[in-house]
Picture 1 (tube, rainbow, N blue to C red):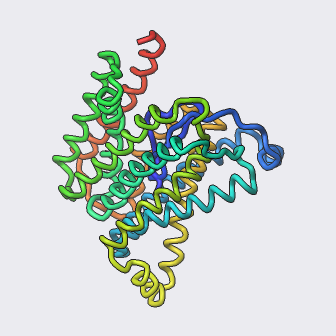
Picture 2 (picture 1 turned 180 degrees about the vertical axis):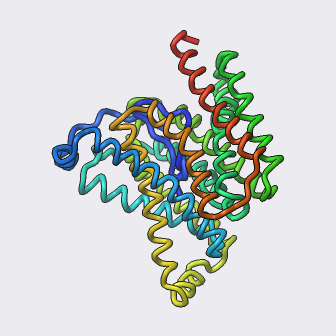
Picture 3 (picture 1 turned 60 degrees about the horizontal axis):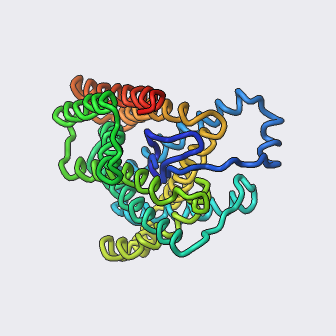
Length: 349
Protein backbone atom coordinates (compact mmCIF):
# COMPACT_ATOMS: atom_id res chain seq x y z
CA UNK A 1 0.00 0.00 0.00
CA UNK A 2 0.99 3.43 -0.12
CA UNK A 3 0.89 5.34 2.90
CA UNK A 4 -1.98 7.82 3.28
CA UNK A 5 -0.59 11.03 5.05
CA UNK A 6 2.30 13.17 5.95
CA UNK A 7 2.51 16.05 8.32
CA UNK A 8 5.40 17.97 6.79
CA UNK A 9 4.43 18.32 3.18
CA UNK A 10 5.45 21.54 1.46
CA UNK A 11 3.93 23.35 -1.47
CA UNK A 12 4.78 21.31 -4.48
CA UNK A 13 5.26 18.17 -2.46
CA UNK A 14 3.44 14.98 -1.79
CA UNK A 15 3.92 12.12 0.62
CA UNK A 16 2.39 8.29 0.93
CA UNK A 17 2.22 4.94 -1.05
CA UNK A 18 0.04 4.09 2.30
CA UNK A 19 -1.48 4.86 3.68
CA UNK A 20 0.25 8.26 4.18
CA UNK A 21 3.84 8.82 2.35
CA UNK A 22 6.20 10.32 -1.00
CA UNK A 23 7.60 13.78 -0.24
CA UNK A 24 9.62 15.73 -2.78
CA UNK A 25 9.80 18.96 -4.65
CA UNK A 26 7.38 19.23 -7.57
CA UNK A 27 8.37 21.36 -10.55
CA UNK A 28 5.75 23.44 -12.23
CA UNK A 29 3.41 21.42 -14.40
CA UNK A 30 2.16 22.72 -17.75
CA UNK A 31 -1.56 22.71 -18.31
CA UNK A 32 -2.75 19.62 -20.12
CA UNK A 33 -5.70 19.10 -22.44
CA UNK A 34 -7.29 16.62 -20.07
CA UNK A 35 -7.16 19.00 -17.11
CA UNK A 36 -8.49 21.90 -19.18
CA UNK A 37 -11.38 19.77 -20.42
CA UNK A 38 -12.37 18.80 -16.88
CA UNK A 39 -11.97 22.39 -15.68
CA UNK A 40 -14.25 23.64 -18.45
CA UNK A 41 -17.03 21.29 -17.35
CA UNK A 42 -16.85 21.88 -13.60
CA UNK A 43 -16.39 25.12 -11.71
CA UNK A 44 -13.08 25.39 -9.78
CA UNK A 45 -14.90 25.21 -6.44
CA UNK A 46 -16.81 22.05 -7.34
CA UNK A 47 -13.72 20.46 -8.86
CA UNK A 48 -11.67 21.16 -5.73
CA UNK A 49 -14.44 19.80 -3.49
CA UNK A 50 -14.61 16.61 -5.56
CA UNK A 51 -10.85 16.17 -5.39
CA UNK A 52 -10.82 16.64 -1.60
CA UNK A 53 -13.71 14.19 -1.24
CA UNK A 54 -11.84 11.68 -3.42
CA UNK A 55 -8.73 12.17 -1.28
CA UNK A 56 -10.68 11.37 1.88
CA UNK A 57 -12.44 8.39 0.32
CA UNK A 58 -9.24 6.86 -1.06
CA UNK A 59 -7.18 7.37 2.11
CA UNK A 60 -9.86 6.01 4.42
CA UNK A 61 -10.92 3.38 1.90
CA UNK A 62 -7.50 1.77 1.61
CA UNK A 63 -7.22 1.59 5.40
CA UNK A 64 -10.62 -0.06 5.76
CA UNK A 65 -9.99 -2.47 2.87
CA UNK A 66 -6.62 -3.45 4.30
CA UNK A 67 -8.17 -4.03 7.71
CA UNK A 68 -11.01 -6.08 6.24
CA UNK A 69 -8.72 -8.22 4.09
CA UNK A 70 -6.02 -8.86 6.68
CA UNK A 71 -8.10 -9.10 9.83
CA UNK A 72 -11.76 -9.84 9.03
CA UNK A 73 -11.66 -11.73 5.72
CA UNK A 74 -8.63 -13.72 6.80
CA UNK A 75 -6.18 -12.95 3.99
CA UNK A 76 -2.96 -13.39 5.97
CA UNK A 77 -0.42 -12.12 3.47
CA UNK A 78 0.42 -8.45 4.17
CA UNK A 79 3.73 -8.55 2.26
CA UNK A 80 2.12 -9.96 -0.89
CA UNK A 81 -0.72 -7.46 -0.54
CA UNK A 82 1.81 -4.62 -0.35
CA UNK A 83 3.57 -5.99 -3.43
CA UNK A 84 0.25 -5.90 -5.29
CA UNK A 85 -0.08 -2.26 -4.23
CA UNK A 86 3.33 -1.50 -5.69
CA UNK A 87 2.61 -3.26 -8.98
CA UNK A 88 -0.69 -1.41 -9.22
CA UNK A 89 1.00 1.93 -8.61
CA UNK A 90 3.60 1.17 -11.27
CA UNK A 91 0.98 0.25 -13.86
CA UNK A 92 -1.38 3.13 -13.14
CA UNK A 93 1.46 5.65 -12.93
CA UNK A 94 2.79 4.56 -16.30
CA UNK A 95 -0.66 4.89 -17.85
CA UNK A 96 -1.31 8.28 -16.24
CA UNK A 97 2.00 9.76 -17.35
CA UNK A 98 2.05 8.18 -20.83
CA UNK A 99 -1.59 8.53 -21.87
CA UNK A 100 -3.07 11.42 -19.89
CA UNK A 101 0.22 13.33 -19.50
CA UNK A 102 -0.83 14.34 -16.00
CA UNK A 103 2.81 15.37 -15.47
CA UNK A 104 5.77 15.68 -17.85
CA UNK A 105 7.72 12.40 -18.01
CA UNK A 106 11.17 12.43 -16.41
CA UNK A 107 14.01 9.96 -16.79
CA UNK A 108 16.55 8.67 -14.27
CA UNK A 109 19.74 10.48 -15.20
CA UNK A 110 22.47 8.42 -13.55
CA UNK A 111 23.33 5.31 -11.58
CA UNK A 112 23.77 7.52 -8.54
CA UNK A 113 20.20 8.77 -8.82
CA UNK A 114 18.99 5.19 -9.39
CA UNK A 115 20.76 4.05 -6.22
CA UNK A 116 19.17 6.86 -4.23
CA UNK A 117 15.68 5.96 -5.43
CA UNK A 118 16.36 2.29 -4.67
CA UNK A 119 17.34 3.21 -1.11
CA UNK A 120 14.18 5.24 -0.68
CA UNK A 121 12.18 2.30 -2.04
CA UNK A 122 13.65 0.02 0.63
CA UNK A 123 12.64 2.41 3.42
CA UNK A 124 9.26 2.81 1.77
CA UNK A 125 8.75 -0.98 1.69
CA UNK A 126 9.56 -1.29 5.37
CA UNK A 127 7.10 1.44 6.30
CA UNK A 128 4.19 0.20 4.19
CA UNK A 129 4.60 -3.48 5.06
CA UNK A 130 4.75 -2.67 8.78
CA UNK A 131 1.68 -0.47 8.49
CA UNK A 132 -0.32 -3.11 6.64
CA UNK A 133 0.80 -5.88 8.98
CA UNK A 134 -0.20 -3.87 12.05
CA UNK A 135 -3.81 -3.85 10.82
CA UNK A 136 -3.94 -7.60 11.47
CA UNK A 137 -3.46 -6.97 15.19
CA UNK A 138 -4.77 -3.52 16.13
CA UNK A 139 -7.86 -1.48 15.19
CA UNK A 140 -7.72 1.19 12.49
CA UNK A 141 -8.50 3.83 15.12
CA UNK A 142 -5.43 2.89 17.17
CA UNK A 143 -3.35 2.61 14.00
CA UNK A 144 -4.28 6.18 13.09
CA UNK A 145 -3.52 7.44 16.58
CA UNK A 146 -0.01 6.00 16.33
CA UNK A 147 0.40 7.35 12.81
CA UNK A 148 -0.38 10.84 14.07
CA UNK A 149 2.97 10.83 15.88
CA UNK A 150 4.84 11.15 12.56
CA UNK A 151 5.97 14.75 13.34
CA UNK A 152 7.74 13.51 16.47
CA UNK A 153 9.80 10.95 14.53
CA UNK A 154 10.44 13.44 11.74
CA UNK A 155 11.92 15.91 14.23
CA UNK A 156 14.03 13.17 15.83
CA UNK A 157 15.42 11.89 12.52
CA UNK A 158 15.99 15.41 11.22
CA UNK A 159 18.17 16.07 14.27
CA UNK A 160 19.97 12.70 14.23
CA UNK A 161 20.58 12.51 10.49
CA UNK A 162 21.05 16.17 9.53
CA UNK A 163 21.69 17.78 12.95
CA UNK A 164 18.83 20.15 12.16
CA UNK A 165 17.54 21.88 15.28
CA UNK A 166 14.06 23.29 15.67
CA UNK A 167 13.02 26.08 18.00
CA UNK A 168 12.11 25.32 21.61
CA UNK A 169 8.47 26.06 20.80
CA UNK A 170 8.44 23.34 18.14
CA UNK A 171 9.90 20.74 20.50
CA UNK A 172 7.46 21.69 23.25
CA UNK A 173 4.58 21.22 20.80
CA UNK A 174 5.69 17.60 20.35
CA UNK A 175 5.07 16.79 24.00
CA UNK A 176 1.28 16.40 23.65
CA UNK A 177 1.88 14.32 20.51
CA UNK A 178 3.79 11.77 22.56
CA UNK A 179 1.72 12.05 25.74
CA UNK A 180 -1.49 11.54 23.82
CA UNK A 181 -0.35 8.26 22.31
CA UNK A 182 0.88 7.08 25.72
CA UNK A 183 -2.59 7.69 27.16
CA UNK A 184 -4.27 6.05 24.17
CA UNK A 185 -1.99 2.99 24.36
CA UNK A 186 -2.53 2.46 28.08
CA UNK A 187 -6.30 2.56 27.62
CA UNK A 188 -6.68 0.74 24.28
CA UNK A 189 -9.06 -2.23 24.85
CA UNK A 190 -7.59 -4.21 21.93
CA UNK A 191 -3.94 -3.36 22.59
CA UNK A 192 -1.53 -5.83 20.99
CA UNK A 193 2.17 -5.35 21.69
CA UNK A 194 3.46 -6.69 18.38
CA UNK A 195 0.86 -4.72 16.42
CA UNK A 196 1.78 -1.60 18.37
CA UNK A 197 5.51 -2.02 17.78
CA UNK A 198 5.29 -2.61 14.04
CA UNK A 199 2.88 0.31 13.69
CA UNK A 200 5.43 2.50 15.49
CA UNK A 201 8.04 1.09 13.10
CA UNK A 202 5.85 2.03 10.14
CA UNK A 203 5.42 5.58 11.44
CA UNK A 204 9.15 5.93 12.08
CA UNK A 205 9.93 4.56 8.61
CA UNK A 206 7.60 7.09 6.99
CA UNK A 207 9.33 9.91 8.84
CA UNK A 208 12.81 8.58 8.03
CA UNK A 209 11.94 8.37 4.33
CA UNK A 210 10.84 12.01 4.22
CA UNK A 211 14.08 13.11 5.91
CA UNK A 212 16.35 10.93 3.77
CA UNK A 213 14.53 11.98 0.62
CA UNK A 214 15.14 15.61 1.48
CA UNK A 215 18.85 14.82 1.64
CA UNK A 216 19.23 12.55 -1.39
CA UNK A 217 17.10 14.31 -3.98
CA UNK A 218 18.11 17.92 -3.45
CA UNK A 219 19.98 18.83 -6.63
CA UNK A 220 17.98 20.26 -9.50
CA UNK A 221 19.23 17.52 -11.81
CA UNK A 222 17.92 14.77 -9.50
CA UNK A 223 14.58 16.23 -8.46
CA UNK A 224 11.64 14.17 -9.67
CA UNK A 225 7.97 15.01 -9.77
CA UNK A 226 6.03 13.01 -7.19
CA UNK A 227 4.20 10.98 -9.82
CA UNK A 228 7.44 10.21 -11.67
CA UNK A 229 9.08 9.20 -8.41
CA UNK A 230 6.15 6.86 -7.72
CA UNK A 231 6.56 5.41 -11.22
CA UNK A 232 10.17 4.43 -10.44
CA UNK A 233 9.83 3.57 -6.77
CA UNK A 234 6.83 1.25 -7.12
CA UNK A 235 8.46 -1.45 -9.32
CA UNK A 236 11.67 -1.24 -7.27
CA UNK A 237 9.62 -1.78 -4.11
CA UNK A 238 7.81 -4.75 -5.68
CA UNK A 239 11.18 -6.28 -6.65
CA UNK A 240 12.45 -5.83 -3.08
CA UNK A 241 9.31 -7.40 -1.60
CA UNK A 242 9.25 -10.46 -3.90
CA UNK A 243 11.87 -12.59 -2.07
CA UNK A 244 10.40 -11.66 1.32
CA UNK A 245 6.88 -12.70 0.39
CA UNK A 246 8.17 -15.98 -1.09
CA UNK A 247 10.30 -16.77 1.95
CA UNK A 248 7.95 -15.61 4.71
CA UNK A 249 4.52 -16.22 3.19
CA UNK A 250 5.35 -19.33 1.16
CA UNK A 251 3.56 -20.19 -2.06
CA UNK A 252 1.27 -17.20 -1.66
CA UNK A 253 0.37 -16.88 -5.34
CA UNK A 254 -0.85 -20.50 -5.52
CA UNK A 255 -2.79 -20.07 -2.28
CA UNK A 256 -4.41 -16.89 -3.59
CA UNK A 257 -5.43 -18.61 -6.84
CA UNK A 258 -6.92 -21.51 -4.88
CA UNK A 259 -8.77 -19.04 -2.69
CA UNK A 260 -10.10 -17.29 -5.79
CA UNK A 261 -11.48 -20.60 -7.10
CA UNK A 262 -13.41 -21.04 -3.86
CA UNK A 263 -14.45 -17.40 -3.53
CA UNK A 264 -14.09 -15.24 -6.68
CA UNK A 265 -14.90 -12.16 -4.61
CA UNK A 266 -11.30 -12.14 -3.38
CA UNK A 267 -10.25 -11.06 -6.88
CA UNK A 268 -12.55 -8.04 -6.66
CA UNK A 269 -11.23 -7.22 -3.19
CA UNK A 270 -7.57 -7.43 -4.20
CA UNK A 271 -8.03 -5.53 -7.47
CA UNK A 272 -10.10 -2.84 -5.77
CA UNK A 273 -7.66 -2.57 -2.89
CA UNK A 274 -4.68 -2.19 -5.25
CA UNK A 275 -6.51 0.44 -7.30
CA UNK A 276 -7.44 2.49 -4.25
CA UNK A 277 -3.81 2.29 -3.09
CA UNK A 278 -2.82 4.13 -6.27
CA UNK A 279 -5.66 6.63 -5.91
CA UNK A 280 -4.23 7.63 -2.52
CA UNK A 281 -1.12 8.92 -4.27
CA UNK A 282 -2.97 10.43 -7.21
CA UNK A 283 -5.46 12.38 -5.07
CA UNK A 284 -2.66 13.44 -2.73
CA UNK A 285 -0.95 15.07 -5.71
CA UNK A 286 -4.20 16.60 -7.00
CA UNK A 287 -5.14 18.12 -3.63
CA UNK A 288 -1.74 19.80 -3.38
CA UNK A 289 -1.99 20.99 -6.97
CA UNK A 290 -5.50 22.45 -6.73
CA UNK A 291 -5.23 23.86 -3.19
CA UNK A 292 -1.97 24.14 -1.26
CA UNK A 293 0.41 22.12 0.88
CA UNK A 294 -1.06 23.83 3.95
CA UNK A 295 -4.56 22.67 3.01
CA UNK A 296 -3.26 19.14 2.60
CA UNK A 297 -1.68 19.34 6.04
CA UNK A 298 -4.94 20.50 7.62
CA UNK A 299 -6.87 17.77 5.82
CA UNK A 300 -4.32 15.23 7.00
CA UNK A 301 -4.80 16.30 10.61
CA UNK A 302 -8.55 15.79 10.29
CA UNK A 303 -8.26 12.59 8.25
CA UNK A 304 -6.87 10.54 11.13
CA UNK A 305 -9.87 11.42 13.30
CA UNK A 306 -12.35 10.79 10.49
CA UNK A 307 -10.77 7.42 9.65
CA UNK A 308 -10.86 6.41 13.31
CA UNK A 309 -14.55 7.33 13.65
CA UNK A 310 -15.55 5.57 10.43
CA UNK A 311 -13.62 2.42 11.35
CA UNK A 312 -15.28 2.25 14.77
CA UNK A 313 -18.70 2.61 13.11
CA UNK A 314 -17.95 -0.18 10.62
CA UNK A 315 -15.90 -2.68 12.62
CA UNK A 316 -17.48 -1.91 16.02
CA UNK A 317 -14.20 -2.18 17.88
CA UNK A 318 -14.52 -1.09 21.52
CA UNK A 319 -13.31 2.35 22.53
CA UNK A 320 -13.24 4.19 25.85
CA UNK A 321 -13.09 7.76 27.03
CA UNK A 322 -9.37 7.74 27.86
CA UNK A 323 -8.53 6.34 24.43
CA UNK A 324 -10.50 9.10 22.74
CA UNK A 325 -8.89 11.71 24.98
CA UNK A 326 -5.42 10.38 24.15
CA UNK A 327 -6.16 10.47 20.42
CA UNK A 328 -7.54 14.01 20.69
CA UNK A 329 -4.43 15.16 22.61
CA UNK A 330 -2.15 13.67 19.94
CA UNK A 331 -4.03 15.32 17.06
CA UNK A 332 -4.08 18.62 18.97
CA UNK A 333 -0.33 18.31 19.46
CA UNK A 334 0.12 17.82 15.71
CA UNK A 335 -1.85 21.02 15.06
CA UNK A 336 0.26 22.90 17.61
CA UNK A 337 3.41 21.48 16.03
CA UNK A 338 2.33 22.68 12.58
CA UNK A 339 1.60 26.17 13.86
CA UNK A 340 4.88 26.31 15.80
CA UNK A 341 6.85 25.33 12.69
CA UNK A 342 5.15 28.03 10.64
CA UNK A 343 6.01 30.66 13.24
CA UNK A 344 9.55 29.36 13.49
CA UNK A 345 10.05 29.62 9.72
CA UNK A 346 8.50 33.08 9.67
CA UNK A 347 11.00 34.31 12.26
CA UNK A 348 13.92 32.66 10.48
CA UNK A 349 14.76 30.06 13.15
